[in-house]
Amino acid sequence: MTLAFPNPSRNFDETRHGVRFSGHDGMFEILFFVEAAVLAEGKPPQTPLSEEQCLSAFDAMRPSIQDVALKMYSGHHRQSNTLTTTDFR
Image (cartoon, rainbow, N blue to C red; front, side, top):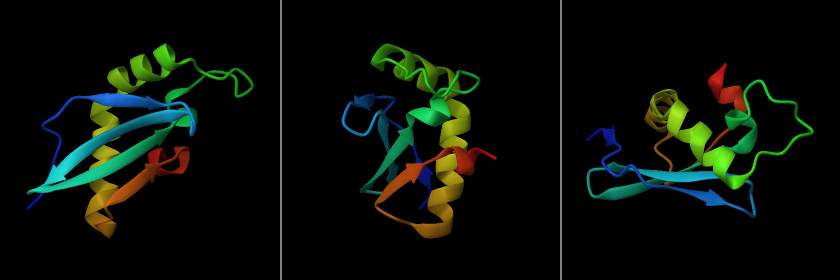
């Protein structure tokens, strides 16, 4: 099967400061975490994004985030994946 994103929900992770979302490969849930640095594109690094800003940026970037998640997952098939700025270059 291929990875799909049927559930649009996403959650802010205050501890790791980023956004969690999931996809599904058949009946298996695949977890993803996007670091806030990815979502802060163009913002000064010393200015941390708020929860609202992270979620809003995630929503605006959702198609590209899911594309990167698909590429990452197709190469490794891990249950849990972290997307960093390096993955978006």
